[in-house]
Length: 203
Image 1: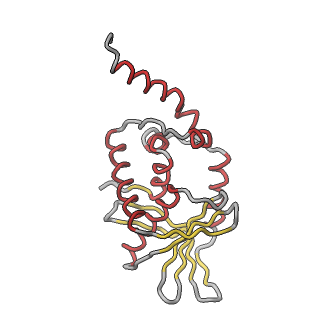
Image 2: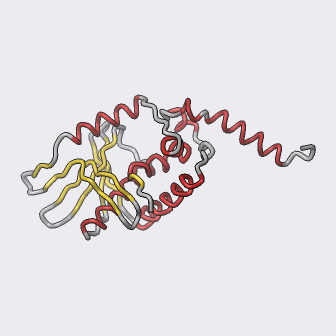
Image 3: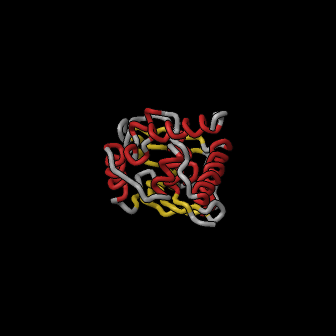
């Protein structure tokens, strides 16, 4: 099984076409959102680990993997409590707001840590730098299923080597750093034309 980076799940869950542009065609462009995200991750990655006055060991940029899922990557922050509890925290640059693509990425990190450490993690968190607040995420059965299903869909895209159609969410398209490479409006027109030709009795 080919290994997939945990962060790629975020890309696919945000937009399958964006994922394919990056991982099939090697396209990537920076915009204000990606630059802020990179800056936040660089800040987190500076320290190796610390121990708080409460005895919590905090590991930064911790490598993770799962042989079962075929995943590799790293966690921004993992907190190890004296009672054995493990609490990963993913850093995002924006304001405190729930995004399913962020939650899927976090759940994948949890599933890697569980396999590596032989623990069960029911709750973890995303730290939103824009609000300087954490948002706790319950790692429930539904979210775990989303990780497995997303990975399966990603592998289909990689195996077929074709760009998926653009998503039908124009706000996400406008905020995407790959908007110019993707050309979602043009792709939508081409898809509509192909569908019309398919059902055109004169064709």
